[in-house]
Length: 118
Length: 110
Image (cartoon, each protein chain N blue to C red):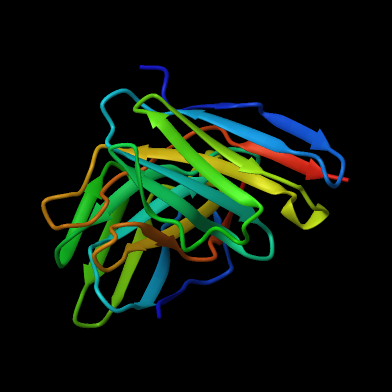
């Protein structure tokens, strides 16, 4: 398996533009997560899906952020309009499910998208 | 709410043993995980503890004490390639998502 695939690897855009990040999870994984990483705030969970259904989007910072998962093999994270403070590395991760102890045992992360909003 | 605490930096020499501690406060708990992240790379899974005790995977071991809300990652026979950030993460409540600590930057010196 190729692992979690994200595109683009780098995105440079101007403030006010729409940005769309894409993710293909590992086949067979039921959970998909979007994380954002910055020096100031570390790794933050934005939203996660279970079987293509959004379960918790409480981490989405503002209405400018939206995420979809139209099928089991594709998800998008959209920022419209983008702002300089959105600059970060955005990671998509997928997981097979919960462990016997109830926790999410192992996340597989994609290589991330480095977003720079000028 | 929830919080995790881990040291921001640790330095050790090649061949040594280093322990990275993690304490947590969370309502609802579903295991403690550890991830490694090299500069410019993605976090990669190292270990998971769902129950108290020690889990060993090669040079790395992880320990959990749920009564103390405490865990640690033990790295033995350190190598230069182990220089990276190490994150502890806890599973939360009924949502099953992971919350990550702020990370420990490990520097291995020759």
